[in-house]
Image (cartoon, rainbow, N blue to C red; front, top):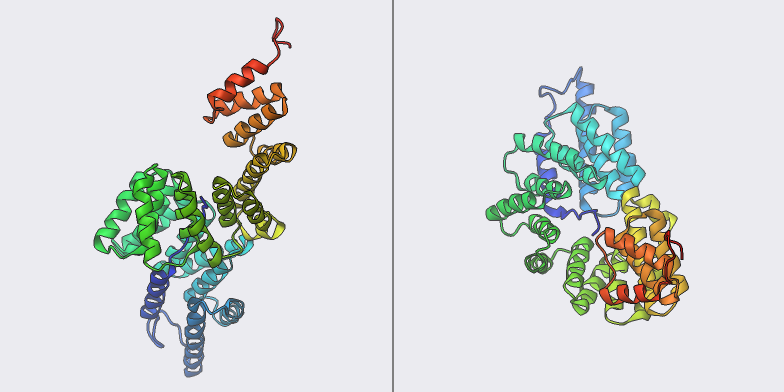
Amino acid sequence: MRCPIPVLVCATLCFAITFAQQTQAPPGQPGVPFQSQAGHMEKGAVQERLNRVRTAVFSGAGRIDESIQELKAILALDPRSAEAHLLLGVAYRSLGSAELMAEAKAELRQALALDPALVPARLYLAHVYLDFGQAKSARDELNTALAQLPGHPQFMALLGESERRMGNPRRSVEVNLQVLQADESFAQARYYLSLALLDLGRHDEAIPELERVVRSGVEQADVFLSLGGAYLETNRSGEASTILRRGVQIDPSRSDLRIQLARAYRASGLLDEAEQQLKLAAPDGAAALASPYYQYQQMESDFYLELGLVQMDQGRLEAAAQAFQKVLDRDPDHGPANRHLAEVYLLQGLYTPSLKHADRAKELGFPLPEDKRRLLRERLPARKPGGQE
């Protein structure tokens, strides 16, 4: 599943806007060092500009590049504006590239250095940490925020997700159920709850939760990706195809959605359709730049694994072997790739390399089906003393 989690943003952004508006220091209040009436007027003009850019950043109206330039200009006038650093961090994160995510983290840290009480900065910083796979750092930020705002649902839900990312799905279930007891309509907590249930293998409980999130009107590609994947795990390929197509409509650029849709088509015997989705999902340099490295590596492995499976079903064994080998070049301990490469070699009559990968797949918890294992033993040449053939 994609790591990268969706941010069900409406409540988050409304919270951030409201908090920022409530915590703005009016001109002349403590903490705003005015030296003169002219300085007072200049500070007021900066705040007016901040108000406008805040609306642009949170409106989703596609004016992020303009907003970034405006925020840089504001910071040139007032480099100690914690709110400007916060908004710049949010703007950088919304663009999504790995390089700008690092910039987002730096800006959010600077906002907190200037104003440790600026709680929305901790929320967005936690999201950035999760984007980078740093769940413990995210949890630390959220616990600090919850000390300032005990029980706040945004922070609680994300805390639950941080626990899941740290390998504690049961704790994630507990935290998000606590949030939902207070507000059962909170889609973000319900989504994170469903992810934790999936991690626990409780698909029959997770699927209704994900379906409820979809019915609530959430239009986030990751929700459809998670539900489609859950359908596939429970052999519901037709329903998976339907829901994954909806996800692709929301974000046609998402390779992970297309890879899962290809998997659903393959499970339904629609190999041409599966191949077409994989052509559209093929990894490229732009995708690498737009994703944190570990996420791109996972997506690339998923792509070549699925490509190999489609090619194997098409009888293109040489191409399938090459695809599985590409997965193993990245991760020699990839269990499914070892198993499927063993199957391809068995079909090609290459029994010795087939046994090598079959043994490794078994060690990794992905053994060949017993009938194929038996066939491999029968076809292997007799071994001479000393282990030589």
